[in-house]
Length: 349
Image (cartoon, rainbow, N blue to C red; front, side, top):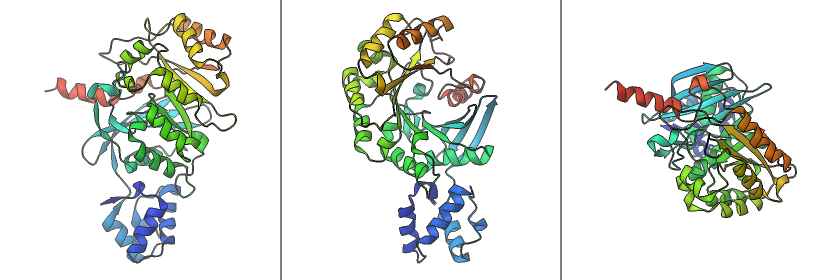
């Protein structure tokens, strides 16, 4: 079977034309799928019967199936099963005036961040385009919620799967697809310099938001916390970010997970400010107090420490915001629900 959410409109038009149907029929099918949320080809009543039969025999709109979901007042986490039996997480984050969907781009992750639940199993494989897009389609269908924002901040390193992520972004922002605003799609990377360079060179990817995990302004410490980041120095990363093409009034977000007793000191805050240097208008900093994960030896700093860190950056003219992780009741940390099922499976053997 071919997975429909993995096609661009141009690709699907060619597919249908090769099967003897008019190319505009692809537009009608995509309208049903992306605008109306219809996965049943038989219900697409403005299509000829022959085309509906062809679609049902050759294509499917679904690449994921729901295993479970866990609700909290501020979020809902979903665990999906892929066609090859793997599991992937997606989180719906409920803000005051909008909803944000946190999607995964890989099953597991190779970056190996010491504080991350996703890193426990290492990298299993990249998600395909349809598996990325289907996270949005499934959550929208399950919840009937309007989802305006998408962040590639779930399991995996998006820029290590840039081909499939790029195609998924095209589907998310195209009028023939999910028609999201480019300003409401964010790619969050652990700092792959080569991937950021590709984003900068890509007319489509450089239009969406970029967020980069820093987590320490000190090279050696950052390498310990994020082992894969040894592939490029912090200096190289900042040089790439300072030359990244930005539209007026856009900023790159620097993500900084605060770990108690490790990277939460005033020395860290001052060094982070020095790293940004004179490029204050180009960046904003999101401070993320650590979301505890069972079996990992890290803790969240005190509120006093968090606010002191923020104040040091503010005093140096750097826009800095504290982003408390939502959904602790839903195994909020990335990869945590998936890992919890693995722990349960092991303990029951």
